[in-house]
Image (cartoon, rainbow, N blue to C red):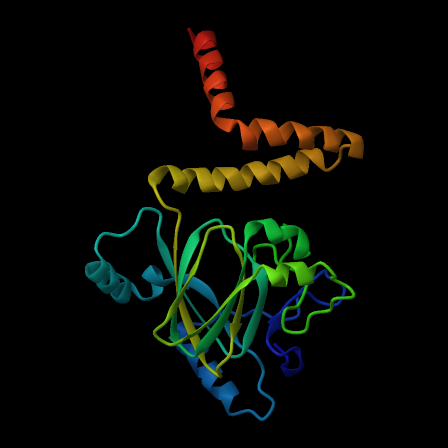
Length: 253
């Protein structure tokens, strides 16, 4: 990533591509590239994409499991390192313990209901793989994104040095800045109990299918579906599920 971008991983000017290039490298090669970049006068930003730690560092993962006990259901660990790097707010369906191994990170967390104030970009086309906010927190443009002020009033901030960690609840939007010249982060993601492991993915798929199905409808019909979804799925869900289960049982009988 070019030095003038100051580590912000984002879209290209026309929003069709991204402002960085990708290449394949081993962990050793990535480490050498990062060290080489530190010696440059105008230092470019280098980030290694998070990847499964049990595949790259299996011995370290086994040691962690032996110390902490049995592995949590649905838990995965990934490893990422960057030079100065700025990831705009995004979210995951899992909970996360973000453990700082080297360098310093600044975490800014937004509750799920702030989605309307974060100006989220396209769902299927994002630099991080998951949708991100189009508003920069490092250099906020309140003229272009006026509701961002409301989101910032509700955020939680934490600065963590090596040896510290931050807890990121599931579906919370989080903005992560790498502040040191060399940063390493290990994320432990988990979905909770066995039911949650399956249901989390199913809920996301449901959202995507709903968007694909309803976005082509006229606005009046979309509004009608909106008021239908609210009571059926979010206010009296348990009663509706019981009635639906009984109806299916009678048909099967």
